[in-house]
Every structure is written in C-alpha cells, then in structure tokens.
Length: 175
Length: 347
Image: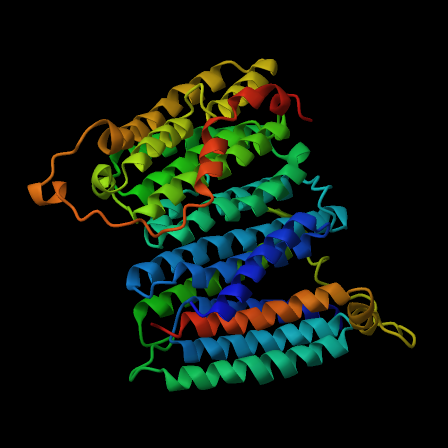
C-alpha cells in the first residue's frame, strides 16, 4: 500500500490544482493552494526528502500563503465566488475532475500512455526503496551543496527575491 | 522613475540576459529569463495609465507562458536523457517545445499577437528596449541549440512571420505598431537562416539592432508616435526628415544601404543550400515591409502633408534633446554595406 502513496498524493495534488484553476475567488483559491502545498510536501517526504518537505510547509504554507491569505482578506469583495455559487466554476471543476479520473483510469488499466511523454502504467510513481540511507541523506547533502558549490545560485536567487519585492512595490506605487 | 529603482531594474535586466547567455544548465537559463521578464515590467508601466498596465499584463502573460514551456522542455529532456546540459537537447519533443517557447519570447508568428499591442501601449524608450535588448537572450539560446532544431518548423514560422510582418504593418499609422511589425518580419528573416548558417542570424541581429535604435532615437527627438506627427517634422527639424528617409529605406533592405547586407547574406546562404523558392518568397514578402517604410518617408520628407495653416507657422524652438549618439548610429545604419566582404566570410 505504501507503494502507491505517491500516486495517491499526486492525484490529490491535481485535484487541488483543478480546484483553484476553475477560478473561484482568491480566498477559495488559497484553500486549493493549501491542499496542493500540503500534499506536495507529502510527495517530497515520500521520496526521502524530509527536510525539504518541512521547508515547503514552513516557508510556503506558513509564510507566503499566510501573507497571501491576509492580503486577500483585506481586498475581498462582498460575495466571493465559491465553487458552488457559479455554474461556470462548478462546471469547470467537475469537468477537470472527470478528465483527471479518466486519465488515471487510462494509465492504470492500459499498458502505456503516449500523449506528449510516455507513462508506463504505475511505474513512474511507485516508491520502491524504503531502505536506510545511512548518515547523510541525499537531500541534506543537496542543501549543503547549495551553499558550497552553488553559492552563485544563492546570490542570484537572493537578488531575484529582492528585485521581486522592489518591482512589486514600484508597479503598485501608482503615479 | 526613482533613480535607485531604475538602476536596480536595469541592472537586473542586464544580468538576466547575461545569465541566459552564459549558463550551461537549463535551470539557470530559466532563472535568467524570469529575471529579465520581471525586471522589464516596471519599465513598461513607467507612465501609469491603463494602456501601459494592459501592455505590461499582456507581455507578462506571454513571456511567463513561454518560460513555463521552456522549463517543460528542459524537464522533458531531463526525463529522456538524464542531464540538464544545454548543448544536448536531443529528444525531438523537447527540441520542438523549446523552439516554440523561444520563438514565443521573440514574437515570431504564430505567437506574434502580443508584439504590436505591447509596443503600442508603452513609451518610446521602453519600446526600444523591448524590441532590441529583449531579443538577445532568446536568440542566444536558439544559437546554442541550433543543430537540434527542427528545420521545417523553424522555416514555416519564419515565412509566416515575414508575411505577417509585411501585411500586418500595411494598415498602420501608429509608428510603434509599425516598428513592432518590422521587428516580427526581421525576426522571421533571422530565424530562416538559423539552421543553415547561424552566423548570418547574428549578422542580421547586429545590423537590425542599430537600425532599430536609430529609428527610435529619431522618433524620440520629436516624440513622434504617429505618422501625422512625423509629417509635421519638416517645420521643426528638417534635417531629421532626411535622416528618417535613409534609415527607413535601410530598414526596408534597399541597396546601397546597410539593411541590404543581412538580406543578401541570408539569400546567398539559402541558395548555397539548394533552397530557391523560399528566399524568393521571403524577398517578395519583404517588399510589403518596404512599402510601409516608403510610405513613412513619403509623408515625412518627400511631401509636405496637407495640414491646417497654423501648423505651417510654428515657433522655432531650440532643440534641447540629446543627439550625441545619433551621427554614429546613422552611419552604422546606412553606410556599412562596403564592409560586406568582411562580414560575410565570418564563421
């Protein structure tokens, strides 16, 4: 059963994506983001990256999404559009769910799915090894490598974040 | 704009393009593209009016979609080959997706719809940066993955771009839209020769950029954005009307001006590859471009357009705008053709 945990989590991930892609009001979109973020964290943890998964929870859900939720709550309208309030939103959500269900069934029942890329039934999502990795896991080694070999990447990333904030402030400043 | 913000934004824009040009890992290429796109958005909304906001939104949406396609192509390549190296984009799915992502960033047909609308909604200086600097990064990546691009796809897109650049610009009187369609057509010429001899692509780029900078500088001298306001220029800056004449004819590709050199080189390289029908079609469609450039010169320098009498008697103000770089740019844009032997044997 644990073999299929990644595929189940991926299905819930896609349901969350369909949930906010059907364009309800941003508050309800935030709910979809929370579901997808939490489940994505689960996928990362299933592949052995416990530190990175907790990082997703802490920074993404606990930092960025909280700020997003507060700003959306400040700028909300009187009757926000939920998934069941508008026929368009409900219809696109239902059609997205049906399409995902059909895709998953086609992948599980058939042997191979060749749309743009080739999927080999369940093989790409199964988690096979639950063995002991030793003292140093791959993901903590990767994070350490980011600060040693990848110091240029840290500089670029930090600069991009700073510029992101400066640009957002500049655009919303007005005249 | 606040000088500190402007310097930060320009630094990020330049570093974004440099990161794209110098990276060997697809992830860094994507990072460079995103930095570039994010940094130019405040330049597009420099005048805070709804038209600029609309132009910036359209630019952001198309470029973000293209970046997502780029990432998808890189990850598809990772799935099939197992590495992130730029030079080895072997999988045809990944190569096709990457080509479409990069041509979407350049504004080639069938992804050209954003170019006139975005160029029209922004000030002339931002339009200049959009049409010249923003072409460098995607073209450098296309130059790097050149051996693995599907030639049929690229030639189709370039022929459609030349056609659309020609026919789309015919009905325009707004100068920024004319320059946008000119950019679409020139990108079409550049992409046509990419898989045969990419040096000629770079030659075309190195001559297209000075010609476009010259045109925009001449337009910025009198802040002219419509053909009508260009037609008043005989009264204000009569020398500039002559310079607009030769620059526009150079953009149209007439010998003995510079603009003829890239077209000549591209046609020569294509005929060396036994490809005769396509350069013929491209040249015939470039005549459409030449028509609307000539129409601009007709209204600007060759005739005095009918105006009201109070337009014919103007206060003659001293020109206070900076024209220091203009003589050099005019020389580069119109008189480089004798250097053709050096440029065409470059490798």
